Amino acid sequence: MILFALLGVGCALLARFLFTVYFHLEKFFKRFPLWVAAAIGGFCTGIIGLLVPSVIGTGYGWAQFAISQDVQLLPPLMLLLAAVAEIVGASLTLGSGNSGGIFGPCVVTGGMFGGAFGYGAAYLFPSAMPHPGTYAIVGMIAFFAAAAKAPISTIIMISQGPPLE
Image 1 (cartoon, rainbow, N blue to C red):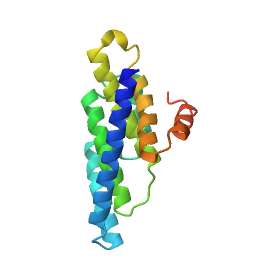
Image 2 (image 1 turned 180 degrees about the vertical axis):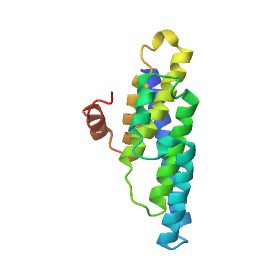
Image 3 (image 1 turned 135 degrees about the horizontal axis):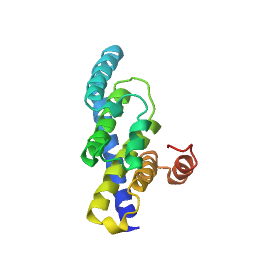
Image 4 (image 1 turned 30 degrees about the vertical axis):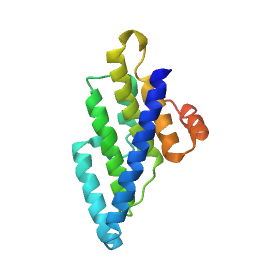
C-alpha cells in the first residue's frame, strides 16, 4: 500500500506538471492568430509524435504495453519519456487551439508513468511485486483523478471500462 500511495503522490505531481505546461503554452500561443497557433501546435505535436509514437492517436495500445509487463517492447525509461511526451503533446495541441480531449492523454500518461513506477518497484522489491502492470492501471486512475479533481468517478470509469487486453 505504501507503493500505491507513493504512486498517487507522483501522479499528483505529474498532473500539476501537465497544467503548468498547458497554461504556459496557452499563454505563449495567445500572441498569434488562431490559424498560426494551430499550425505551430500541430506541427510541433507531429514532430514529437515522430520521436515518440504514443503521442499520436489515442495511445491506448501503448498503455497496454505498460500493463502487459513486456519490458522488451517498451522499457521503463521509454515509459517515462512517453509520459512526458504525452503531456507536452496534449498541451501543445490544446494550448494552441486545436481540438482534442484530456481524458485519453491523461489515461495514457498515467498508464505509462504507473508502468514505469511498477517496473522500478519490481526491480527494487522483486518479492513484493507479483504483477508490476497493476501499477499502470492504478497510475491511469490516479493521474486522471488528480488532473480532473474527480477521484470517485475516475475509479468507476477506468475500473469498469472495457478490458484493455
